[in-house]
Structures are given as structure tokens and as C-alpha cells.
Image 1: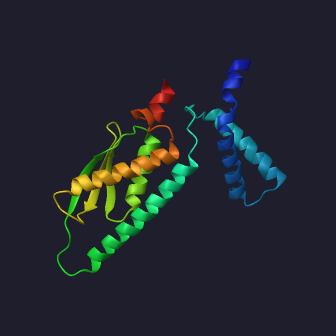
Image 2: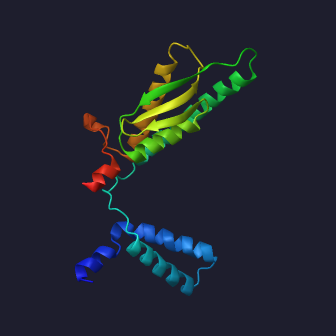
Image 3: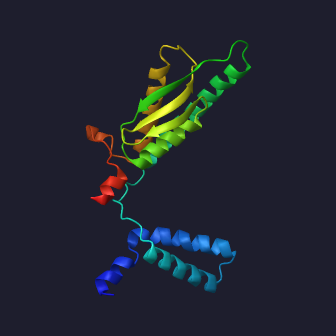
Length: 191
């Protein structure tokens, strides 16, 4: 094996956190942090990275502290508001409220941002992501109709847009400026 071939098999700086987590996991499996177990974990982690190399992804933007606080505050408010609405619908007298399937297009095409937005939207009572169309960046949601039935689609889409804006501000700061869509991480890495 040539030096360049060997260098291609050794982990780079971006893989060091992955190696560290592999060693921690290895120590957890053995239930010990003895020197033999740690060295064994390092050797197993290096072997796994050499045999199963991970694709090189572009560097991810650093999360924004201000955006993360804004996301947490918005999510908390949304959870409390929606929980009270759904609780009222559950105990009020009358018929079961109607529901709808709503298509909500997203601005981002990043798998990570789509997944984060879908997960956070699904946490909110009254909405559930039932399908994701990744190529078009569209979430399909099952939503309870809590207000005007004619406006349910617009209300759900606006709520998803607000959540996505906060996710992007927290996890991909700078992506909202200039109206530039976030590139798909996997396709970008293959180029």
C-alpha cells in the first residue's frame, strides 16, 4: 500500500468526534474504562473507520446561540398553545373536530434541516408529519382543524414556515440572508 493510499484510510480531523464517540460506546459496552478497554476501543474505532470510510461532507455551519434560544422559546410557546387547544378540543362537548392533510413546502433542501423541522413540527400537539417529499422539500401534515376550516391550510403552512425559519436561524445561521436556499448536504458532498 502506498503512502497516499494509507493516508486516505487514516481518519482526518473531521472524524475525530466520531472516533471519540466510538471509543465511549465501546467502553460502555464493556462497562469499564480500564486502559486495556480504552486502547481496544481506539483500535476497533480506527479499524472501523479504515474498513468503512465515511463520506466527506462539507463543513456544517456553527449553530447560533441567539437562534437556538429563539427556537427554544418559540417551540415552548407553540407547545403550550397547541397543548391547551388540543386539551380543550378533547374535553369540550360536541362533535369530534375535523382534520386535514396539508402540504407545506419548505425553503430548505438540506436533509438535516428538513428532518429537524419535521421533528419539531411533529412534537407540537395537533400536527403530525405523515410524509416527506425530500426532492421538493414538502412536508405533508395531518392537522386538527382548530379554527376556520377554510384557513386551516394557510395556518398550518404559516406555522411550518415560522418553525423552519427558527430552525434555520438556530442551526444554519446565514442561510436566511440573501434568499439563498440551503444546498442538499448529500448531493453537495458528492461534487
